[in-house]
Structure formats: structure tokens, C-alpha cells
Length: 186
Image: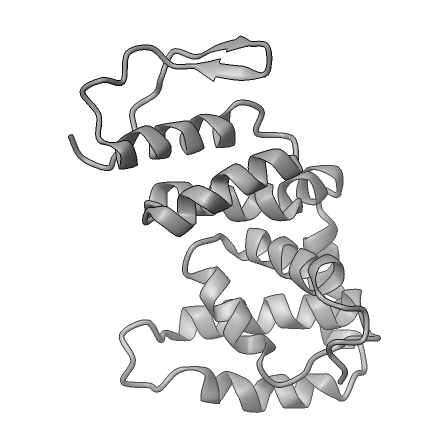
């Protein structure tokens, strides 16, 4: 049986998910199926502490397939909730970026060129432009943090698994809720 996950019939009983007979599955496949169920039960909510701990334990033991990574980043960080609660916010920030004076934009331009080697297979002008937009929108959103060297690499990694706006929201959550308040400065 491959690591690809198929939709499961699930029944919720006393906060425990029952997913039918799994006797034919390996332990890894069982865990991945359970992670998939946790991620897809209610896609609009942020994962609870209990759900995050369960998923974390599975990630430490088994390789999480790419098909689950996107949803994990969005739900585990709370970015999906923010994105749903603020439709159009990212686009409005992007419209204001060209008219917003901030010295951090100069540093972003320098660092975009250093993020990937032009010989790197992952590099493309398209990714560079997406990184510019995500970082520019973030500078506008949070001028106190603005930009500092290294944030470009975080955005680049997120863009490999997420869409541009999703990357922006996950990045916001990482910087604003998961790191200490004064961790980054411009």
C-alpha cells in the first residue's frame, strides 16, 4: 500500500476517531491515515494543542507526505483562520506597497538576489517576484519588525509548499505569534 491517502469513512465517538479495520496497514500507514483525518475533520478551525501534539509525534516518527504538509502548515499555525477572517487583506496590502516608504525594501531587493543561486533548480523569476510581494506586504503589515536578513529564506521555503497568499499568512503567524516579540528588527 502506498503512502497516498484515500478518503476514509470516519465516525466520531467520545472524541476518539474510529476508522474501520486497519489490520492490513503498516504502523506508518495507520499514523498517516489518522493525521489525514485530523487535518480534514474541520478545515476551518485551527488545530488544538492535543491535535498538534499528535501530529508532531507522527512527524517525528514518520515522513509526512507532501499532500498533507500544506494543510498542516495552514491549520497548525492558525493561518487558515486568519485568511478566512480577512478576505482581501493581502491584496489591499499589495496595492499600498509601492507607495509605502520604508528602508527595508532596499534590503529585500539585495537579499532576493542572494536567496538562490541562478543555477539552483528551485530558483525562478516567478518565485523571486512572489517573495518580493510577500515580504513587501509583510513590511507594510508590520513596520515594527519590517524586514531583516534571513526572512527571505523562510518565505522561500514556505513558497515551495504553499500558494503566495497562504505563505504570507503562515509567515505572519510564524513571526508574530511563534517567535518572541523582539526577535527580529529592521
